[in-house]
Image (cartoon, rainbow, N blue to C red; front, side, top):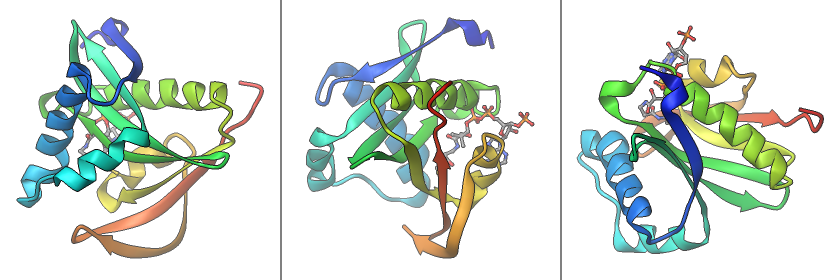
Amino acid sequence: MNLKELVFRQIEYDSPEYHQAVKLRSKVLREPLNMRFTETQLRAEKSYLHIAGFRKGKIVCCLYLIKEAERARLKQFAVEPELQKKGIGSEMLRFLESYCRKQGFSSIYMHAREKAVPFYEKFGYECYDQKFLEIGLPHRKLRKVLAQHE
Ligand SMILES: CC(C)(COP(=O)(O)OP(=O)(O)OC[C@H]1O[C@@H](n2cnc3c(N)ncnc32)[C@H](O)[C@@H]1OP(=O)(O)O)[C@@H](O)C(=O)NCCC(=O)NCCS
C-alpha cells in the first residue's frame, strides 16, 4: 500500500462521491450490525462536512464532521475493510486535524467504538466520562485539543 497515492478532500453532500461514501460507511459500520441508514438520518447529513480519502479515484475511507461551535464532532470514520490497518486511517486523521485547524476548530470530539479507542489514543485523543452503549456497542467519549501552531 503506497500511502502517497492517497488524496484527501471535502466532498459535497448528495454528490456521486458522497453516495460512494455512504455505501462504504454502510458496509463498514452498519451492515455487520444488520442495520442500515434511514432516509431521515441521511437527510440530516446535508448540514455536515463530509471528508473522503481517494486512491486511484476510488473512495477508500471517509467520515463526517458536525460543527458544534468551535468544536468538531467526528462521526462514522470508516476505512475499506481489506485496506484497514495499513496506515490509511492514520493519514486520514493527519489530514483531518490540519483541515480542522484551517476551518478554525479548536478541538475534535467523538463517541468512539471501544475497539477503535487504541487507534485514536496513538494520536493523542483522550477518553473522558464513563463507557456507554450506542447502537448496542460499548463506546467511549474522546477528545483532542488542536494546537494552533502546527
Ligand atoms: C478504526 C479505523 C478507522 C482505523 O483505520 P486504519 O486504516 O485501520 O488504521 P491504521 O492502519 O492507520 O492504524 C494505525 C494504528 O492503529 C492501530 N489500530 C487500527 N485499528 C485498530 C483497532 N481497531 N484496534 C486497535 N488498534 C488499531 C493499528 O494497528 C496501527 O498501529 P501501529 O501504528 O502500531 O501499527 C479502521 O480500522 C476502521 O474503519 N475500522 C472499522 C470501523 C471503525 O471501528 N471505525 C471507527 C468507529 S469509532
